[in-house]
Image (tube, rainbow, N blue to C red):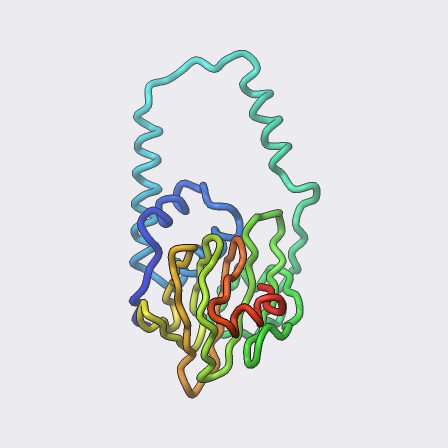
Length: 216
């Protein structure tokens, strides 16, 4: 597998620092499973962070610091622990990492001609929606942009747009500054894991007509 498109160093550093929200973390981890280059960079950032912490001078804890930390942990923890099945469910998607297969999945639903979405139900709340997006061979998406950030990991098949060709293992980053029109290659469907904040903005007359019916 030759991977040509990777997350930015800023995203990789945020992943290593643990500052991404859960949905974005899932997308980044999905890419790292198949990309040794990005795994090495993330590990180097973890070592840098550890060295910085190790070299900090000791500081006296304030009164009540432990109780405050425990209080914050209780607020951040989910109300109930996520229940994972003892064995991975049968999610027949090539390239989908095992850790994602342990999550619960919704049913495939129609989004547009030859385009289907399957929600991934995360074990804790996240402002990022995560789902599988399946598009048939030669599908030409409507030109669109986004109101916020979208992270896309190609699991199988391939698509192209102005940014180049994206095949298995490739990572695509989009936001409100990007306008694109992905086109799926002929011969095989394309399945991606998508972590998305905000909404899709369809362009052109047909896009404006379709906008009320497209919900990702």
